[in-house]
Structures are given as structure tokens and as C-alpha cells.
Amino acid sequence: MKIRNEIKVGVIILISLGLLYFGLNYLKGKDVFGKTIYFYSVYDRIDGLTRDNPIMLNGAKIGRVSDVQLMPDKGNKVLVKMEIQLEGLLVPDSTKAIIVNQDLLGSKAINFEFPQVMTYNNPSDTLIPGIEKELGQVVEESLAPIQAKIERLVEETQALVAHVQITVTTINETVKTAEDAIGSIKHATESIDTMVTSQSVKLSRVLDNVGAITANLRSNSENISDILENVATISDSLTRANYATAVQNASNALAQFDSLITSINNGEGSLGLLVTDDQLYRNLEQAALEIDKLAEDIRRQPKRYLAPLGKKNKNPQPEKPRDANDRVIYQNDSI
Image 1 (cartoon, rainbow, N blue to C red):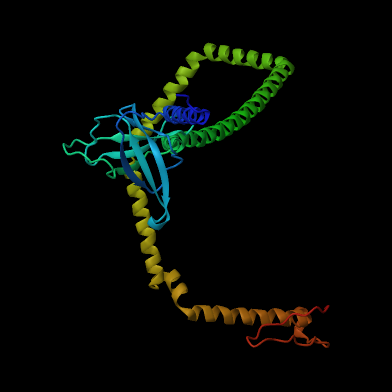
Image 2: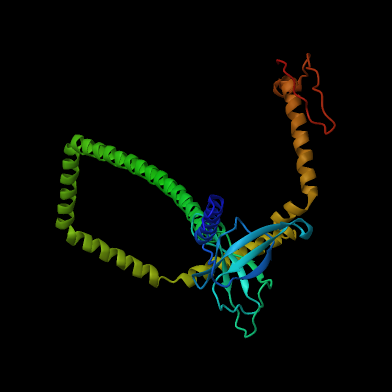
């Protein structure tokens, strides 16, 4: 029986399609001849998880992500279909399907975390979703304390540098002050040296005089000793003097003087009457007035008292004016 060419072409095409299907599934990591089970999980976000990303358990690949679907009617949540290719694997209840980072390039995978329970899920059950922190976020959280320490270290370094600058400025000022002081000391030393050089002759004379004085003191030491003994003797004499008697005599004299003053104030005796009686004062004043009148009359009419037989002066001078107390008021007139 002769096979037609169309049948041959059809068989070849079918074989090719089968090989293509098995090849593609093999390249995708799908075991075509093994038993495959599916699980699902709903995520709020998947951070770049795509189809054919591996599913891992304890570091071993047990399947792949077969489909990713966005659910607009569920608040834009994401449904992930997971294909488990490990035959006989039992997935416990409350297993977490956590999206993790595979490498530093951001490749994603789903890692199964089994709980410590004895019940198991059925195929097509929905697992508990979870997502691992992004590598950048992990690095940022890990570096945050180090960054804070570095910032604090920078601030302390800046404060230290500012303090060092202030210290250096203070040291420079101190050094300048010390240099000025050294210059002043140097100038004073030069001035002293100049003065000593210029006054060396006078200093020699002063030293010679000091030597002569010392020699005189040495030669007159016996006389000085005698003088000191005399001074000591005078001091002893003054010490032994009867000060009490002198003080008593002075007190007695003061008492007598006080008694005398008291008698005068009381009007006793002539001096007391003179002090306390105003009649004597009035008499003396009246006598003074009479003497004044007599003197004025003699001045105006001297011939009355000098002429013989008491002849009167033919040209008497006018009488001087007097005040309320009958005293003469003198004027600048010539006799």
C-alpha cells in the first residue's frame, strides 16, 4: 500500500509540533510527563514578579509561576498561579508564598515557608501571600544606623576642627605675646647692661663707701656697744620712774584749776566780781568817756590848760560830733 505524500507531510508536521511543544516546555522547566499541581495566591503588589519565575523550597526549585493576572474588580490585586512540578509534595496548611529577591539584579522568585502543622492543603488552594523587603530598602535600613553615626561623627569632627582652629589661634596669640615679652625682657636686659656699664664707676664708689662704712662699724663696735648699753640704762630709768606720782600731781593741779574757775563763775573774789558784776564795767566805761572828753577839750583848747592864770583861748575849736554813746566821731581834718 502506497502512502500518499499529503499524509507524510501531515505526520511530519505533527511530530514537529510535538517536538516543539516538548522542547518549549523543557526550556521553560516544565516536566511534561510528570504530575503537576497548582496553587494560587493573591498579592497587593508583586514588585516585578513574572511568569516562569521559580518557586523555591529550602533553596531547591519545586516549580514555576505559570500565570500572573491583575484583578480590577478586586481592587487591582494580583492573582499568581503557581505550578508545582515536584510529584508527591505535600503543602501544609497556612503555608506562606513569599516573593523574594533571587539576586542583586532584582530577579524574583516565590519561596514557600511551611508552618509547624500536620494538616495539608488540597491542590488549587490559595496560599498566604507575603513579600520580602526590597534589597534597596534592606540596605537602606541596614545603613541607616551607620549613616546616623557617620553624620554624628562628621558633626563632632567639624566641632573638633573648629575647636582646634580656636586653639591654634589662641596659641598663635600666646606665642606672639611671649615674643613681645621676650623682646621687652631683652630690651630691659640691654638697658640694665648699658646702665651698669655707664654707672660702673659710681657703683665702684658706692661699694667702696659701703666697705668704708663697714670698716668704721667694725672699728667702732665697742662705742656702739656702749651707746646701746646707755640707751638700755635710760630705758630702765624711764621704766623705774614714778609715773603715778606725776599723774596724781597733774590731777590735783587740774582739780585746783577747776575750783578756781568755779569760784570765778560764782562771783567770789575780785576777779569773780569783775567777771560777774556789770556795775564795774559801766563805771569803767563812764570813766573812759570822761577821759575822752577831757582829751578832746585839751586838743581843742590847749592854751586853757597851758596859759598862765588860766586865760581862755580866744579861738576855741569847734566841738567834735559824738555818737549815741557820747563817743567822738573822728574825721579827716587837720588841727
